[in-house]
Amino acid sequence: MTRSARRTRRTLRMTGAGAAVLLAVSACSSSDPDSSSEDSSASDKLSGEVTVFAAASLKDSFTTLRERFEKEHPGTKVTFSFGGSDSLAASITGGAPADVFAAASPKTMKIVTDNGDAVGTPATFVRNQLEIATLPGNPDKVSSLKDLTRSGLKVVLCDKTVPCGAAAQKALDAGGLKLTPVSYEQDVKSALNKVVLKEADAAVVYRTDVKAAGDKVEGVEFPESAGAVNDYPIALLKNARNAEVAKAFIALVRSAEGQKVLGGAGFLKP
Image (cartoon, rainbow, N blue to C red; front, side, top):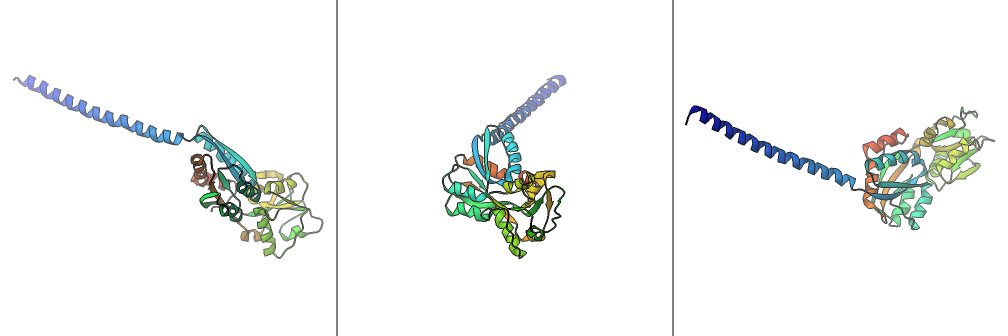
């Protein structure tokens, strides 16, 4: 065999080996997109509607999280029912259809867990602290919780059965103060709204609500609030109609992304 023929045969062998390697690499590459596509489609398999019962103070943050959740999981829909945690708990134990409960206190969550309506142990996902909301510019010069006891000042509190009301009472007790409000409201948004509408001079609400109201009110911090911080627990409900989507929403709330949204609204870390 001539030298030229040997060189040609060797070249053909190398070309064949290279083609085999390319085929193997191609086979591996083609399997990778399939597996990644499976992972991607697995996360996109979530579909359907979930109903979340949540404390009124979570309205702005949860609405933002809903937009992100539905964008990340096309085909899902999150419906909210916001209100006083005690009323929401009573609705759940009364059989109202819901998938997730996010309460503003362990006490109101306990109503649901004691009735056997929650799955597993509720997880605390944020905490919240009280603040005094006054009229813009603070015309009554409120600088402390004690100032709310002044004669002629129209003050609004949340009802004592509602977490924000229970926390306010705890702060008042810590300061040895007695206060008779012009009204007790069933949730924190209603209490804040009395000030926004100028139907009250001040209200004891959460600092997250003061922040959300922007220049419609002015916030006044007070030291007694440090001893009345509320933990917020969240739980999957036993009769959830769409447990997988409900779990995914809870996971978002507890994730770094969810915590960033909640922290930006003024909530404290759990």
